[in-house]
Image (cartoon, rainbow, N blue to C red; front, top):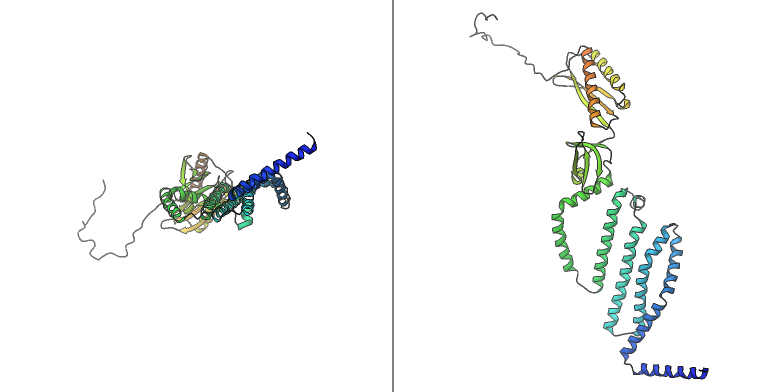
Length: 381
């Protein structure tokens, strides 16, 4: 087939196409133009996305994020594809100029896709940027434990998802007041049913955020004391001195006073009788201090022995020291030896440990107090 034949065939094809277009109604031409526009975007989508990707890479490299830059670009490519679809629809809508109803619907679709692209970008960047303790401190100025970060990420993602739904619904003129009221009722019922769980979750946040204690420390809160073994989302496990494990809800530990000890203590009050002189008290205090400092398992800098109070029936001495022992039985053995040594020192000095007593002093007797008594008292056999 020569060139003239090809040219003639091409002219005939073009003429047939023009006749077909002329025969189409107005709405058919509009639909055809819209399809051609979308087809052009589909054909050149790779080229457009490659341009967008290269531009994003140059933009992200300015922030010196290292390997994170590649992850950010990969995460933003899906929102870029959604934006490309929105742009194609917007251009097709402006070229075709359909009726008001169709144009308004297409505009809403374009705006909805734009919003979805923005929320998908935020949703995917939450994990990649990876909120951590240092970034939170740089933003808001206070420390948050790294273990709390997964909870914060989940809450942030859920918030973005809910906002995206309500924004898209409002774009399509859907009344969300009824849905909000329904969600409020459901949320109230859920909060009442899961009140303890929610309070424990907030307690976990308080424990992790304020750090009143950490795992491995010895704490005391009310009648509960022991070594913290694990801080969970719902409860905290504490190993008591008798080796039993108690599980405490986090909301109780978050609202109750907690006393923390870096080490276990031996602490008690020794009461000696009031017959003890000041000189004897000074010697007793010094000997007790020396005894405690000489023990290998007692931290010497923690020894505190002081004459503190004049008690109701004793002179009270406070004895306090920290031990480098974590095992409960070994702690009891050490405390037993300390108590025995205290008894030996008190006995060696000729002193006595006081016990509760009560003395009654009679200021005077009536003159006839002997009336009714026998003249002589019987002798004991």
